[in-house]
Length: 243
Image 1 (tube, rainbow, N blue to C red):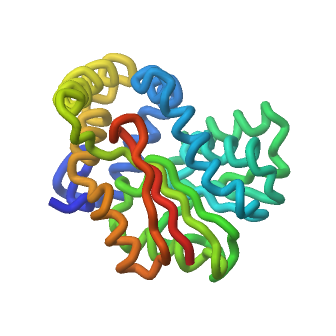
Image 2: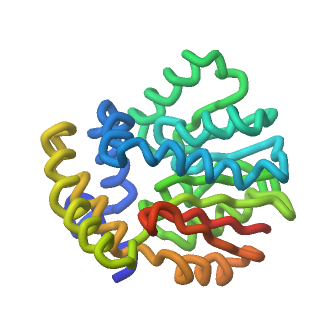
């Protein structure tokens, strides 16, 4: 099953619209649940993902599926680029991100835009780096979104993708699957009042082409020298590639 066919609510209708509605619904609880359900490990994952760009010192960065701007804020903290743009289809998530940015007095450095990963509103060859955390599996068309990211990258620019993956080591794999399939949706349902959102999380991760399969997708689209780094026994993976 391809990741494009996994939708949060119903088999009919646009995945893009459903994902936008889902994240708008859970936006007030999103940051809390991210940190709580991952025991805070997601914070270190973001730090490691942005750390992949330290050697290249990008001056302009696009953060796709920016959500509440955690990755964009981490990029600003580690890399201090001239400008970061964050793009997302969920308006409520962006409002929370803007509040965080204003609180840190970074409004001049980080700008959040409502927009679509499959139709990025920037010219070709604009950014030194493009980042995305836990967003590519939500694309309605994975290859179209990745192609747009490649288009707006400058030559030799880098893409960094942080995404959930599937552990393979016994017995961690079995424990992880039980928690992800049963406990996480229950906690998410009680907290966020959206019974589908965290079931979708598990289903979309299971359907996502992770590891070597995702590297093959990157190569097919035209990215160069893709590599990947497995984190926390395979719960998530960082992918890095170049234009």
